[in-house]
Image (cartoon, rainbow, N blue to C red):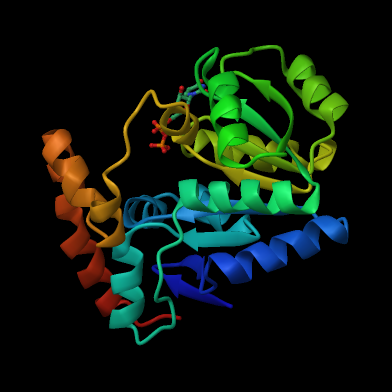
Length: 238
Ligand code: UDP
């Protein structure tokens, strides 16, 4: 099911439900595209119809960020749990390891995807990583060939947003993978190059606060949250 915030659709499903859908998609040969939605993207999409259409074209828009949960509560919606891009990626890796599916890591600076691959295989023994490719390769034909030769079931695309979403929409028809997820800076985090907030902060939904302490220049972006919530409340369309 989906809810709509300022014209942008968001799925109501949690990790388990989404994982079940995605495994079905793979087994039945359907292509699907996962995009993470946060208030920042919704606000941007309000002034950028092309971005809004792009986000709405995804199969699954996951509620990444506490702001979306609050917006759903304000509208008496059903979204109760955050589904973050990186955690969805990790769930998909576990799903792949348990169901004999393969993954591909495309994006980030040279060397990072390979480091992330090693870390993922430590976390999920038996995970088949069909290939990796950095996000600075310019040769389009080579990118397509590398991915199709590896023929993975799932591809994680880490080129930053909205570049990765555009890339997915433009290429998914000619590519072998069934599941496409844009994962932003996740390979940098998984490889250990960038630290995530401690588990306690994550559990309390306070990852934003930890990031704010580490990167105070995010304040401006985070101040937009009340504005976003007000706009959601005022929006009468469905
Ligand atoms: N990146 C890339 N190719 C590019 C530009 C960026 O692979 O041409 C990678 C970059 O190395 C980083 C990720 O894209 O790993 C962007 O991460 P960021 O956290 O900025 O993305 P966000 O999650 O904010 O969209």
